[in-house]
Image 1 (spheres, rainbow, N blue to C red):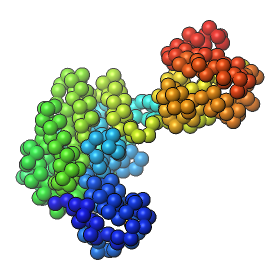
Image 2 (image 1 turned 90 degrees about the vertical axis):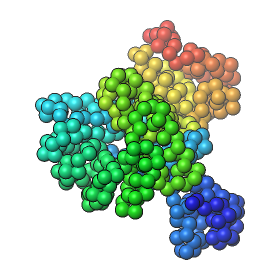
Image 3 (image 1 turned 90 degrees about the horizontal axis):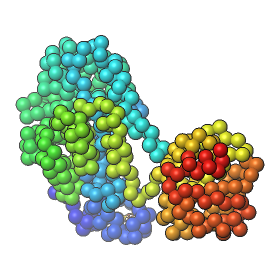
Image 4 (image 1 turned 120 degrees about the vertical axis):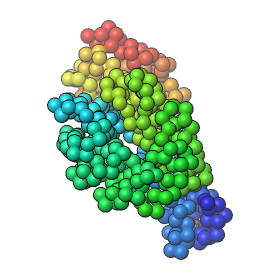
Length: 444
Ligand code: SF4
């Protein structure tokens, strides 16, 4: 049972010194009960209180890591139900499945295709995260060879999927160093599976028949091994959605420990479009890992973009550094485009300047990562801030003219900017998509 703010308060030092960042010990206790702070922030809390409060101060969903090295995937450690309450910390891991019945001469092409499911979007590298190797042959020796071949061809972490402990015993020793996720312990084998996971120090998935059965199973396994990922066994969109929502609610609101672990689910539809739609629901609603069959870029890249949107911190706009960006083989005569440092704005402008095939400089003014209209309305994108940046950025030393282009939506700034900066100010198109036509008309 979760401790209340009052229970926690009774064990705090009651100095009201504010060193933890809270105004009072009571405020700190309330924040701790809501999992919005960490007990470590109070330097005066006694060892006894630390022990007593350990469970209350632990994150409601355990942090579990699959894989090792730079591609290791962190799951869980989430503290809220709605991302606008704080943020979501660990994006859903997307796994692509490969059956071990695939002929070995086709394996390199298949794994190469999965490794290549990546894209750069608003300055971030997005990619799939795992490969799930399915024991479809039901032959431990074949599974062992196949898993070893997959591991050799990818740096992505693996999920080993089988219902046969002998398959894990055969395949695990060769790849345990990569910390694959073992899928899955069930009611009839959980002791052996927990032992296997412990021996090889790998995370273990727990698969129940439904929500209640999964909770019961986790309660039995957790005393044996704690690096768990849970699957309620549901496969229809509506049931998975209901299960994921209950798990997150019970873990975060009620601190119900059997659900305090990240989750894994599998898509079911054979039609790749339906599969991607189903996966997009699970990305929005709390899945830790989704295992999919679809492996075409046209299917996966939209999902990566969707995941990026869901897991972007809503309180921190994605911003680029305010500095000079050179697009193409610029010369001193190249045009200078001014925009804001909101990443979506900057990358839209960058893409269109590149598409115009006329090299140019882009100067994103620091507007705390807000968009053109928002920053203009709040006064952060003003004649003064633009004039200051034209002066301080060093652009004058790179060009032999003093003409800049401002976004069409802020045409009203042009007169004052000219007056403040002494630059010739051109009003560009209202949308970045108009830049190529504008650039060809003005600078070709
Ligand atoms: Fe209270 Fe500790 Fe916070 Fe000081 S640092 S206000 S003693 S909880």
